[in-house]
Image (cartoon, rainbow, N blue to C red; front, side, top):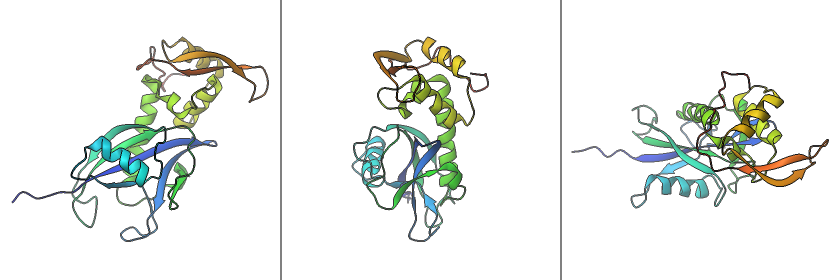
Length: 221
């Protein structure tokens, strides 16, 4: 007999809140791993494919129906002992979004990464893989703008890079690199003074899918 192994979807949903990179998690109220933080997830239904399951879980489990979240498949986790109750294969998705509101689910909350040193199952490993994917994608894609509102300043974008990468960046070099990268930013024609000082140009995300040149973390930006 061919064994039947359940398949679940777990979501690593990241956003920038305040001055910290935060993940959407919930505290378990049942064993195993009672009271530990866990990623939002659920089992794939027989009549849905994986992207549909991820969207359903984002709305039903994570409590963010219709939220402007960029979702992409992260990795599959299938080693035998990842769930002490039964063999479960999990397909993880990475979600990135600007400063999202509180989840509609009462038990869900946004937590800074520093508060998630211990998590249920292998969810910390999955979360760390998602964070590294996000950090890497900021190097060679315009995905950093996914953490920004529809219109943003270069300073807003730089703040995202600094928080996700965990390092300070030179403002002038950063401005030069992102405005020279073909198709990364598009000027809206408007300005803002919300940060004080001189009016700053507002941009929106351009059509580029890859950054030329890339924003390498190994270089001083």
